[in-house]
Amino acid sequence: MKKHYFFAALFAVALTANAQFTDDMESYAVGAPISQDWWTDWGCGGGAGCAIISSDAQANDGSKSGLVPDDGTTDAVLDLGNKIFGQWDLTFFMYVPSGQEAYWNLQGTVPIGAGEWIMGNFFFNQDNLNPGVGLIDDCPGAPVNFNFPHDAWFSVNLKVDISAGISLATCQLTIDGTELLPAGTPFTSADGTVPTSLGGIDFFSISANNLYYVDTVSYVDGFVGTADFASKGFSAYPNPVSNVLNLQANESINSVAIFNVLGQQVYSAKVNAMSSQVDMSQMASGAYFVKVNVNGAEGTVKVIK
Image 1: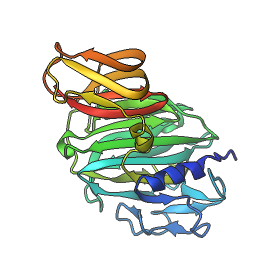
Image 2 (image 1 turned 90 degrees about the vertical axis):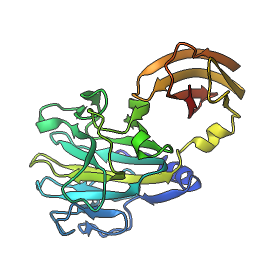
Image 3 (image 1 turned 180 degrees about the vertical axis):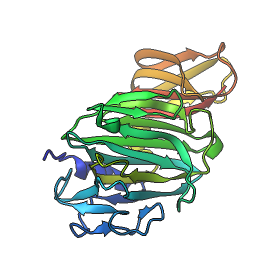
């Protein structure tokens, strides 16, 4: 089994960024259902056939991971705390064997009653007919297709910015190192429905072909990498801006991209200088998200026009 030895560094960064929790899945007895702390379920009792199961068949780090088996009933939930404000950064790793599919969804409240899907069903090799191909079927810009590897661990990273409240929340989603939903994407379903909160992830055994593993979970208050980005001395002013937005840092600004609240990119440029200007005079009034790369460190700031 392939392991990622950078997990320790990932956890170290998470801990410095006010971790809500980290879980390397090592503290659970092999074969036992996991129903404690941040692990719960849809209301099916928490035992075998309901909760995620501790397994030593695969591991991203250490010797254990969490198994979502092919029983068609397991309905495990990772409780993310019903967040309605702040910035939240979730990373976990998945392993989907060849000949198997995987599925999970985002829920707007935990404990889960009737269910409140925030965005999408997340399919990996849906119906066991699309090896290495994933699908998000309900999100801004859906359907969103992506690739993932079978028989290898790959990362999932979800950043949710609720700084302006849940009704204006945005997100960024990266799977296996590929950005699928850019920073500034509305945290809604495809039709714009706003969730109650950032509730949790439902890891459901969708079929008899469903079998996958989850490991190295990190849930952070504040975006991972923010401290490194802050050290670059980046600023965007004036804010609010009427016409020209000034960008400045104490190291070279490599690139700039601006997104509107629909997640649409409205501007991009290579800079390679410590300062730059963006003419926003022709842009409509409203909120924008300025994503910059400063000497390799990425960050996003919100600007009002």
